[in-house]
Length: 209
Image (cartoon, rainbow, N blue to C red; front, side):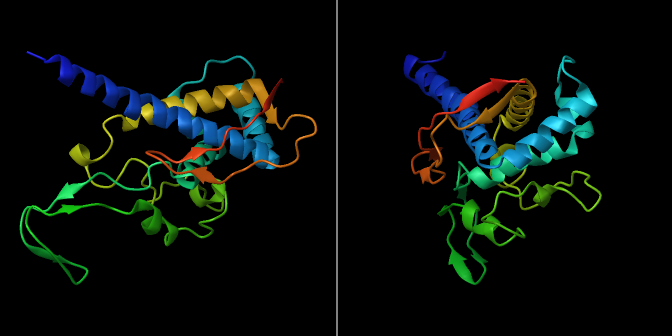
């Protein structure tokens, strides 16, 4: 049966992988909307035009909301809260990019450095990274917020996280406009390094629309 210690580890994994990462990404998302009010306004206009003020938002709506979908993806790319991918163990001696890798050696993917080379404006918050010239959403191979690899080596909660982020973000922006409190003119957008990259604590006003 399941030992108590194992149960504690499993619960800890669920909280870390299923709640902290999603909430941290949303925390970054609201920060970016405050810093980029023009982008926030474009998302709200798209939501109003396509869904109206009261229709329930579901994950499938992302196909009709290309700009909103692009903004959610750009929040994940730019915040980059998990900057090192899941570990791999080499199953045989091999060579990778000219470097020898021994059997059973553990390898990590530096996702942050890989991604910086693949984007037009890597250090700028730019939803256009995920849009074509006609404004249609386009997936990008360099988008790796759930680690790299297939099936068993990516985040088990990828689909849940994608669904949560889109629905929560779209509902928040349809209901509120987010802005800095009166008298506050600057906000820190540099990350705090830890298990995940966290934003510095900040205050924000949620104005009902």
